[in-house]
Amino acid sequence: MKPKLCLTAHPSQPAAEAQALSPARRRLLGGAIGSLALAGLGPLAAGPAAAAEAFDHGPWTALLKRHVVLLRGGQASQVRYAGFAADRPALKAYLTSLSALPRARFEAWTPAAQMAFLINAYNAWTVELILGRYPRLASIKDLGSLLSSPWKPAWIPLLGETLSLDGIEHVRLRARGRYDDPRIHFAVNCASVGCPMLREEAFLPERLDAQLDEQTARFLADRSRNRYDAASGRLKVSKIFDWYGEDFRLGHRGIRSLAGFFASQAERLAEAPADQARLRAGKVPIDFLDYDWALNDVPA
Image (cartoon, rainbow, N blue to C red; front, side, top):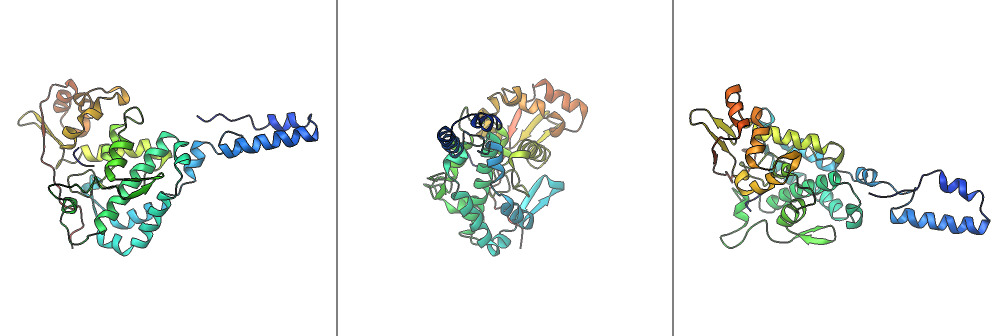
């Protein structure tokens, strides 16, 4: 993160009808059914959910479990980039598997499967980007300059294109009318202390909604980045909400304003019932905290 249905025939019906057909017609029907199956439209085709489950994010989970260290009760994390460097062949093998996925197969998946794939891809390639200069950097921004950004170069072979990290996040994940889920901002990780934590497991389609909810809860409960200040009566939150406030106005779960989002998360942002009530009323002034771009590395 940075500033800125498939129709299938009933499985028993073709076989029953084929018994009443001549051999020639059976051959013709069988060929047609086979063609439909190959096209993803027939009874032999795996539906979107089954196709998505066939993609193995297990290697990414294995790497994350080894090299992600949870902090503050799981509200934040650090990354053992030195460990990732030692395991770089395994990381590259996972990246190769992402690159090998045909776009047509991706497009046949459910939105949850697509989102999980794209979030995992963003996070894994961000780690690979860091490893390209590690340990000779203190921030991901060291990979850019005043005139260039580490998120803009297109170098990632994915879905039949060569994409940038911006392309994955802003063109794919944030495309209007496609997913419209602001929780992606708590899932993609830009290798920085100020960013929502790198999760200690891969995102999976069958668990994505619960995983995104947990990422949201963890980030909002981290008082170093989001908190209600009772003394001033102001809500102090991550700069992410300033950069991407528009994404919280798109109607996800019926919420169409940033204040509405904070109202829905009052129990995570404040401890005292009176403070939570103020947040639910939606009248609390908001301050955006400075963003910490330091590398989220485990100290040596």
